[in-house]
Structure formats: C-alpha cells, structure tokens
Picture (tube, rainbow over the protein chains, first blue to last red):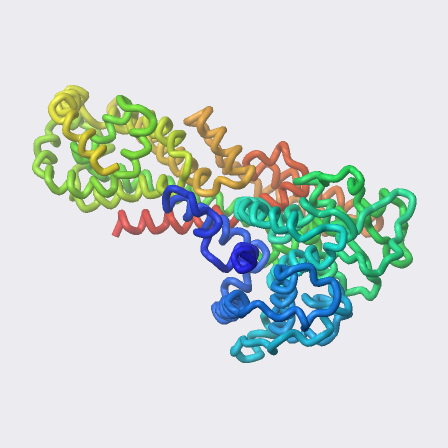
Length: 460
Length: 132
C-alpha cells in the first residue's frame, strides 16, 4: 500500500491513470494529464523539460517503490510502522539523489533539518540511481525538485512526527488526499496542494502555528519542512506558516489548531499583523517565482511590478494570438464545403437529447469518414442548392473530413459534454442555416434520419 | 445587398467559431476558477466577445514609463500602487479575475497562461492542417 501511496504522492511523474481509475474515458485522463502538466510546469518547468532529469526521477521513484521494505533496524526511534520506514527511506534516497544528504542542517535539503537525528544514520543502500552526478546536481538545484522533495518530505515528516497521531489516520487520509490531489494540484502552484492536503489531517506540532501571545517557538523539533526546505536560506530556523495557505483552501480541522504559527525573524517585527503581512508577501513572491518560469523573458526582469508587466503583456499577446488564430480558422473553414451527411448528423442533434449530443459529437469524427466517403456524390447534387453565398464553396472532402474531425476533437478534451452539446446545437444550426437551403435538409432528414441515429447509436 | 448580408453572415460565423474555440478552451481545463468562470459566461451569453482584445498594451507602456520617471522615495508605497494597477489589469485579462484577490490571481494566471499556450498550439495545427 505504501507503494501505491507513493505512486500517488510522486504523482506528477506518473500518468494520471492511477488517480482516476474510474474515469470513464480518455478525456478525463487527458484533462488530468493536462492539469498534471500544468502543475509541474508551474513549479518545475525546467525539470520537466529536461528529459535526463525526468528519467532520473523516474528511475529513482521506480527503484524506490520497487525496493523491498527496509528493515526497521536502520532507523532509530519513532518508527511507527512500515509506512514511515518506507517514506523515510524514500526521502533519504531523494536526499541521496540531491547529493546533499550528509548535512542535516543544510538548507534546501530534503532529508535535512526536518528529520534531525534519525535520518543522520545512513540510509540503506546509497542511491541506486545510476545517472551521472551532473544532472543530479542540476536536479537538486531545481526549484521544482525542491518543491517535489518538500512534498515527499511533508508526507514523511507527517508520519515521523506522528507521535500524537497514529499512522492509521494518516494512512486513511493520504489515499483520499492524493486522489484528490490531481485536480487540486492544477489549481494552484505545486506546493500549495500538498500543503493543503498534508495539514488537512494534521494534528500537532508539524506546522508552526501562530499564537497571538507569543511569536517564538521553543521546541526546535517542530519544523515546517516544506517551506523551510524550499526557501529558508537564512540560518534562523524560521518556521513559516504553510497553514496560511491552508486557510485559503482548507481551514484547519481542529479548532485548537486554528491559529497559524509563525516564528519571527531576527530583528524583525513580531507584531501579528506584520507577521501575517510577511507570510502573505512570501506567498506572493513564491507565486511570482513560479510565474517567472512560465513567462519567457521574465528572468531578466527584477521587481514585482515589471514582472507583472511582462506577465500582462504575455497574456495579452497570447490572447490576441488565440483570437487571430480563431479568425483564421473561421476564414479557412468558410472555404470548406459541408458534406450533406455530415450536415445531417449535425442537424439531428437538436432533435435528440443531451446524451445523444454528447455521443454524437464524440463519434462524429470516427463516423465522419464513413459518411463522407460513402456520400461524396451528394456533394455535387448539393451544390446547386447552395444559395448564392460567399461563405461556403465546394472543396474536397478531405478538407471537410479534417475540419470536422478537428472541431469535435476539441470537444474530446472535455468531460461535461452535455454543456457543449447544448451549446453546439445553436452553433451548428446557425452554420447550417447560413449556407444551405432548408428544404433540401428537411428532405434528407426525413430520408435518412432513421439510419444515421442508429448508426450513431451503434457506435456508442 | 448580397455582400453586406454575406459579411454579417461571415461575422456571425466568425463569432460562432470564436465562441466554439473559447468553449473548447474553457472545457480543456476544468479545474481552474477561470475556466469555470469562462464556461459559465460562454453558456450564458453565447455570442459575446469574451476574450477582450482591447488595447491594454498602450496603457501598460504608459504606466511603466511613469514608473521609471517616478520618485525614488516612498518606493514601497509607489511600488504597491504600481503593483495594484497591474494586478487590476491582470484581473481584467483573466476571466473571472474580478472576484479574485491577488493571491488567487497569481495562482490562476499560471494555469491560464499554460492553457492559452496549449490552445494556441492546437489552433495552429488545425489551421495548418486546413490550409496546407
């Protein structure tokens, strides 16, 4: 089970099939794949684009997951269950990957400060990643990797810190959390969902909380691993509140832990307001960093305002390009001739229910070929019926086929097709009405209406 | 007479195509607030212009030049103000951005950018297929 947990936890490197097993169609997979690509691209653009790194990660994960359960003797103290061991081992191995393992106090270290002593013992088997070190060092320096490592470390530290928790609630929560993780991930930067999920079941001690009375924590062992690993280069053991982000998404379950604990930095105001401000600012800067990776040319720009400028310009240019392309698409399509039968199948949409729409739209491209191929002759008959209209001119069926197969292809990427179907109803009828004589259509409707729906149904 | 009617037809056709493209775009990424917002908007008003293409760039350029010529003191306040202006711009760009606060905008804009890029790739390939 731990293996599965890990597969889900390491999710972004694995296909979403696991997280959406019951999904009925490839569409959902595509969607989650898309979201999956969104998330890594937000956090780990560089990481995903470098195939060597990816393969490293893949090999690391696979080796980790497939490795036999380590003996507990390697870990001292606090081992609650096999899951903890597994997780700790994974994290240790990740630390090995980053080649930063030996310094628990170092920053940006996966197996570092969050684990303190137990991890100082050498993990079983120095890393089995056989890649050269140069990509590994790149790997470790990647902010995306840091985030990913943080994610793992969060899972691990949770179990490690589970002195107040039995591991079972964690076990129970993790599958749920990770199953929901995919959609959650996509809606926020890489770090956010893990944070929002991990503390969802969080009880005590892991994430620093903010109490109005005091701003400093005494116990050095309570660590917020993710943020610390990721950002804190300063020597102060600042525990940042990840739970602030939690506040956005999932309010802490336990009212006792409703506060957000932040340790004040040295020489800075310990006022609750300023702390909140600071956390907020850090969050924002974190997001800006992610955006910097996304938007080309943002690396040279410093300062929030200029970067925001760049982002705005980029989004605008993207939007303009999309609009231009859609205009171009419409101009291209005006030259296409609608095959009569394709029209028929579309025209039938209004008469059927939403489900049929859905299936018809989906099946359109697969059936388009057969329909178009069989009834090519009808094109010639139809042409005289086309009212003098500059919009639609006769062309080869190959173009039509590709056009038709492309339009619904966009719809393939969607889940709630019913909305699209009601939407397509108006559009397609308007298209149809634009260029073709109604009478002819009605004739044809009556003629083959029986056949085509059944044809459609057969393919369902 | 014919030409004008065909022109309006063409325009409505263009709108239709644009609408469809936008819809596909919104449907292509369901998990984001902006996509949900866009979807709702598209469904409720089928033929409006949703992706605004009004000339924001000129405003942006104005503002950046202003910033460079701006005063040095009270940098933070100024910067905060500048940032806020830009955030407002972003709000306008992002569908559904009006109701979001800064953090949400920043997190949503990343996914929006990526999906826009993806959509561009798709559209380019479609257009290429149909023109070549």
